[in-house]
Length: 276
Image 1 (tube, helix red, strand yellow):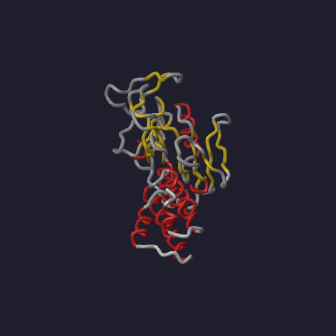
Image 2 (cartoon, one colour):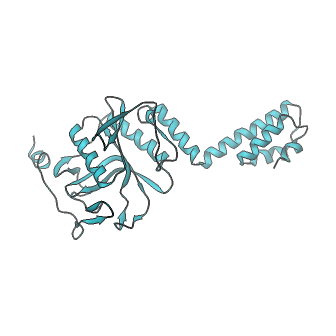
Image 3 (tube, one colour):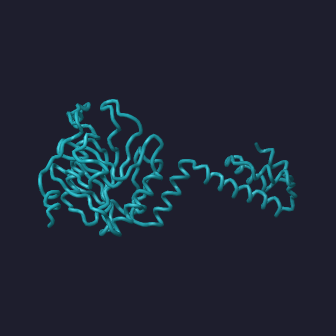
């Protein structure tokens, strides 16, 4: 072990917080806590984290940890409900002796009036590959104690997702076919999306549809418009350039759906377009 490593790991070391900020704040119903941004380590300057007074080094990752982390970012970001923000490696002061980040988290937008700073994470995800299991569990204990509602671990080697249980003080494995429902998410998060790339793509597509993504709505509208014109022409009903343009310019999916149903029986294009 190098001299630098001896100084950085395995010892109970505490760095000073920011000048004038490292004071406990009393949160309603949860006692006194340091502010979430009252750091023991320097964000974006060092790789150090502190967990229960133990200084550890957040090491760079290799596949499959690094690739699974990217997949986690991709899926969670797409599913975040408006009014919330997703973040990667967000350093948080979880208690007096702990200042560490999870791989991905979701927190509410704006300023928490109880603390005068950003909101604490609502849900957090940790990718677990070569990490010390005891430290991963210690993180979960301290996050939940601080007020993080839900904590998940994506176990790379076991191809498994677990959720922290405050009742049992342990990790509960989730079935690969299960879906995680949460007020922070626009749609349930499929557990399989955190383990499989194809499932991740599907989850992102479903999330964008749930958010009413304008690009997807426009693409869907073009598809329905094309079907309307195809049905009319297949039935021998001529569609003028002006009528074709009116159909193709419409992006109202409900109206297009009515037009498509009418096109199957209508005797003219005017009869279809009269279904406003």
